[in-house]
Amino acid sequence: MKESILVIDDDEKITSMLRRGLAFEGYRVRTARGGNEGLEALRQEEPDLVVLDIMMPGLDGWEVCRRLREAGSRVPVLMLTAKDEVADRVRGLDTGADDYLVKPFALEELLARIRALLRRSGGAAGREEPEDGRRLVFEDLSLNPDTREAIRGDRVVELTAKEYELLHLFMSNPRRVLSRDTLMDKIWGYDYSGESNVLEVYVAMLRNKLEEGGEKRLIQTVRGAGYVLRGDKG
Image 1 (tube, rainbow, N blue to C red):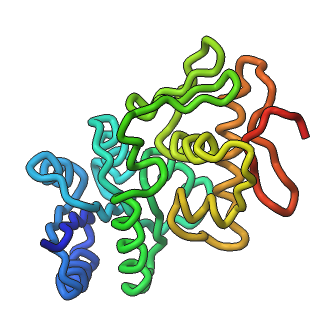
Image 2 (image 1 turned 45 degrees about the vertical axis):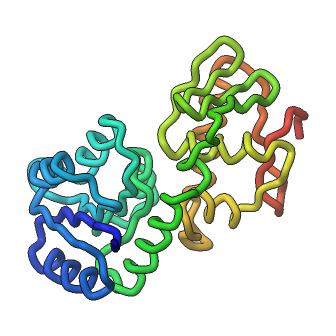
């Protein structure tokens, strides 16, 4: 059976276009006009993917996504918005969204991103955890895939969904230099653009949390190559 997609958008022209386009590609499509209706649709049946508009009256997309993640759902979320500032992208991703597409957009690009998210939801780093639920450990840092809890020394480190995925990838590949392209592909599924600094912003936020108690830096920058999890300074 083809994957199901829930479109949450108060713009009838957008939802009509997406309903036709997605159905033509073989997806099962439901639509909801606004955040409250979208949450109700999610409670009734969780889809394989959510296409979520941000700027809606009443309950906006950020709040819908936040509530969805707080409820424990890991359904992939693709946000649609007219906002193209990096800070807005980061805010959307930080609430738990998996991808971000700016209006107006080409249907072909939307479909490509949906396919990428659906592939990742079936086995991407940070989504499918090891079957034995083993704890990942590097020096004084540990990460429990079952609880998604990070501990540095005796301190619990609170992580957002994307910070967890990023740290999980680093701890699954200790002392291995991971290129920017690799990190973008594994965590976000594609490269935003040559000018986007979303990855750099997230690495900085993750470092701040890991080093909040005065601990030494573990995630190192390798100039011209990428990032690496290692204990030595450099």
